[in-house]
Length: 208
Image (cartoon, rainbow, N blue to C red; front, side):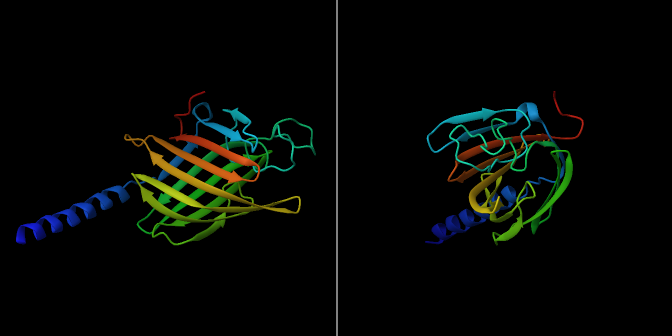
């Protein structure tokens, strides 16, 4: 019985060490989007897939009902890769503490510079922030899974007077050498499912 108790205690201690190691991963730093290594894919309800690998800045929530992903109001072809239009020059400033993750996005949408601050509690409590594109709200909870930061919740936006809810899951991971940050986002709404992979590198390391 004594030996069994020792095994159980050792197992509990090991679990604590593994958990602490997993949470020790730090995403802090300044990160610049590398468009050449980023990509997105959108599946409409009819299972039509549209892919893109340029101007990857955010998730397109769009409007209208055209099955080809076009906005019938503007006639300009497929929707841009970002909800507010063409997103460029995306930079992340991440500050991670034991209690929270602070993410500040600096970007340009249709020639307009924007700064989008977000704070995510690391204890699993719900947080309400601006959506990553600066439009609408994002209510989410954060957890650690397999050395990755998972941020899941609901994004609420209003486009042309129509309220839309999008289920979103963000997965933050960092390379072993600490030089590459990858954010994978899956967003689901009545318009379909969008999968977005954004690869960020340290300033001066972007490949064209």
